[in-house]
Every structure is written in structure tokens, then in C-alpha cells.
Image 1 (tube, helix red, strand yellow):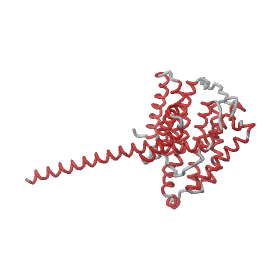
Image 2 (cartoon, rainbow, N blue to C red):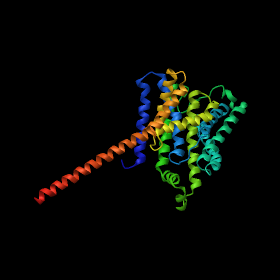
Image 3 (cartoon, rainbow, N blue to C red):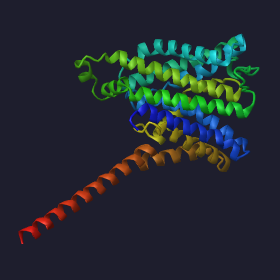
Length: 339
């Protein structure tokens, strides 16, 4: 297909149709809940990979925007009752403004300093959530549920319609991020990641490029927070705690940073492992950590990255073997001609 954007759009449509067909094949509510959680965490982890995989900026505080998305959306719906699509757009705008303010400070820093300053901002926001009880509910989270008024004939109080809405947000969010990393901006971001000094000599505004990526990542992370808040009908301080950022880092490590869909693969793996280990093991945190370390130390890269490298190596060996056979055939032909 000539147009990569059209190819991605068709792939996204097929993925949505497959997800939409799942409830028709099974009556399991657990599967529906699993996919909604995958949508929330998948958007969150993929947005982090905009920074880690494509920008070379490892953030330990990305959960700030996930929690902010959940709380902002919940508070907007509780206080205003505005239509859900408008509330989502307003939530993303709030996340963009906060990301712009935080990123303006953080992206000037390098490596470990960037990572820990983002973590400091996240813990600051988490402390504000705990302390601002009249608005956030403190350590009890937002109480009273999140209103879900119908819009365009869609009733998100129905779990199946919420499932389809979450699947649609996931596909649209992934398509938007895929377009970003495939755009000239995405290639500029990679250039800045690989050699910021050379990029600066070529006329690239390194600071602005990094800041733009930081803002975009924050916006898409907030969208994941919106999906999670709709799923649990609330928001809780854990959404903005440092462990939330650690979970996203684990997801990216499991799935891979090179392949665009690596974080989605990592999301599915982590949720499956977490659900399984929680059921069969008493100290599930210890077992889950051991499994993640096994993946990290055994493969030394994300699962999807490992698969892609294996396929590329196999293709290279096949091409080398074919070239060798062609050379042997040509040599035999020349020998026959000579005789």
C-alpha cells in the first residue's frame, strides 16, 4: 500500500472490529474488564515510549499525567456535568498546560537528573491530591462516582458500551501516536535522541523538540487516565503515585521500545502475569518481580523487539544463503561455458 497513513488507518479499523466482535464471542465480563484496563494502561505506556524509545528521555514521573487525567476528568464531570467528549478534550488541555510547565523545567536536564526531577513533580502532585481533601477526596479518592450522561446515543453506564468506547479511544490514540512518530517531527525527535549536538548544528531546536514530545506524551497519558477513571467510576491517589510510573516502565521493558506496538504487548503481558500470579501466589509482588527480571535479563530487550530482531536475522541469513547459491550457480555456468 502506497500511503503508510492509510495502511495504519486500515489496520486500526481491523483492530477495532476485532475488539468489537469479542463480546459477541463470549459472555465473560472479565474479558471486557481486561480489555478496558489494557486500553487505559496501553495508552499510558505507549505515551511513555514517546519519551523513552523515541526521545531517549526516561521519565520516572509519567504517572503524574495519568493521575491528572483521571482526577481532572472526574472533577470536571462531578462539578459541571458537561458532555463527556467535551470533558475529555478539556482534560487533555489541562494535561497539556501542566506538561508544558513541568517540561519547560525538566527537558533542560539530562539523563538521571531529568528522570528524578520528573519523579519529584509527580510526588508533589500526589501530595497535593492527598492534602486537597475538599476537591480530591484526599486518600479516599473521588467519592460519589463519575456521572456518565448519554451523548450521541452512547450510554457509558452500560459496560459493553464503555468497552466499545474505550476500544475506540485506544485505537484512535495509537493511530495518533503512530502518525506522530512517523512524521518529520518523529524523525527529528530520533535525531535529537541519537545526537543532540549534531541536531543542533543542523538547525534543530533541541529544547523545543523535546518539550513538544513531553507535552504530547502527557496529553496521551491523561487520555489513559480518563479511560481508567471511567472504568472504576472514580480516581484514587494510587493513580498519581510513583509506582504507577514504575508500572509503565516495566511495561515498556517487557514489550520493547523499538517496535511501536511494544508497549501494547507489554501491557497485555503484565496484566496477564499480574492476574495469574495474584490468583496462584500469596506473595505475588515477589513472584511478578522475578518473572519481569527473567524477561529483562534473559532476552536483554523487550519481547516484541526480540521477535523483530530474530525475524530480521533470519531474513538476513536467508538472503545471504540465496546470494551464495546464485554465485555458485553463476560459477558453474561459467565453468561449463569455458569447457
